[in-house]
Image (tube, rainbow, N blue to C red; front, side):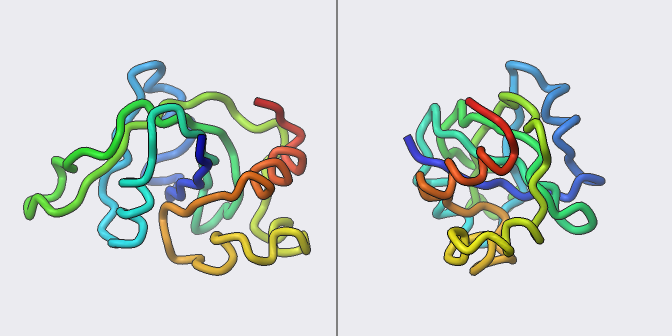
Amino acid sequence: MAYWLFKSEPNTWSFDDQLAKGDEGEGWDGVRNYQAGNNMKAMEIGDLGFFYHSVIEKRIVGIVRVTEKWHLDPTDPTGRFGMVTVVAVKEVVKPVTLAEIKNEPLLENFALVRQSRLSVVPVLQDEWGILLNMSNSVI
């Protein structure tokens, strides 16, 4: 199993929106960066990810699971970009802010910190455990 972080502007698509989709989940569409797209191409069904509210909030707010592997994104008229489908697993007990992440020395190489503009980034297993602990959550 691999771990990921999915960034979304909460006024566009929030974790509450994701929760409302229930077991149907939602396609993670609109990603037009090749590196973020390649991250999605590497995903397998069952992989877990943090749901991160970007822009104003800048914090991890939930956990999602990949339920459908990479497939073409119907919002892309060129047919070059794809998406995965994710379902909400649960809210984290305590949201983890970007400031808290940056203040944790063990996360200094975390992709969210190093490649802050990417909308989908990998999370190493050790980083996943640290972030789960910081959020007071278990999975």
